[in-house]
Amino acid sequence: MKKYDLLVVGAGLFGLTISQRAAEEGYSPLVIDKRNHIGGNAYSYFDRDTGIEIHKYGAHLFHTKSEKVWKYVNRFSSFTSYRHHVFALHEGRIYPMPINLGTINQYYSSAMSPEQAKKLVESKTEGALKDAKSLEERAVALIGRDLYEAFIRDYTYKQWQTDPRDLTASIFTRLPIRFNYDASYFTDPYQGQPKEGFCSLFGSMIQDPKIEVRLECDYFEDSSVPKDLPTVYTGPIDRYFGYRCGVLGWRTIDFKEKRYDLESFQGCPVLNKSDMTDPSTRSIEFKAFNPERKEVFESKKTVVWDEYSRFAGKDDEPYYPIGTRKDKDMLAGYEAMAKEEKKVVFGGRLGEYAYYNMDQTIASALEIFEKKVLPMLRNGKK
Image: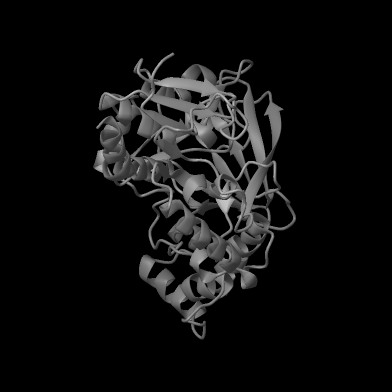
């Protein structure tokens, strides 16, 4: 039987990064995942009928401020020059997002300069609570009630199925407004999509023969899993500890697919649905993420997915940690237990109960490997 140095539970981006680095350092990791594919929620596949790359768990865009992370992923894939743009549907009209000078002028049917628009928004925030406790209070203090009610309120309610007045202000962390016509969704210096698709990127990360991957292998159910190894666990932290502190809350997403014999259905990759009249939160047209694939991009076939957000049940895919006070108290209990596990390192969004973008996941994995996993492996070799 092959001798392994490390068990990695979960073949998502965190686990793959850990595995790649372990193999690079001369160790032999065993990677297991209960799903039938690698890549976690960033997994994608090419649709047989259209050739379009479909993101199975919703849209994934690669962007980062970190030169280190950018250099790392470019070891395993070349990237396109894709820049992400989002639009919002409100009362039958389409607006650019995030809110920028174009959005403001269109909404107010005006031609304001940046300074005029800034003064207008400031006048709309007068009297707002600066020491905001709720999401609504913070949003109104930042952008005014008009823009909040048009683009944030109903979208947020659908996303969380909770009145924004009952959501904490911390959810609304960034100023969602620009006083120029920059419609780029991200401002990160490094952006793009893997030229051969996300799964090609993931596969390249684990090409080293020292890495073994077992799919459809449940850490808790499969008796063949060697649990005496140093372990990196990226599954749900509450599941690992048998839910002793309670079940952590998550939001999940349902998708409804529509296919059209059209070159394009909505003319953009992502269209937010800002009003309660549409129960979906947004729609994704996947081919728009890859305009460089001319044969597919210009074909008369397209695939669109509508997204519907709801509270996750036991068997649902977790997407967004809810993070109520109760959740945070439970997490503190699990974190205390995790510190007592001498041969187990917890990581990733499930293992840490945190929402990470892809670049943040990689950055975290690289750091944790150096600080925790590599020393654990070296000690194991003594």
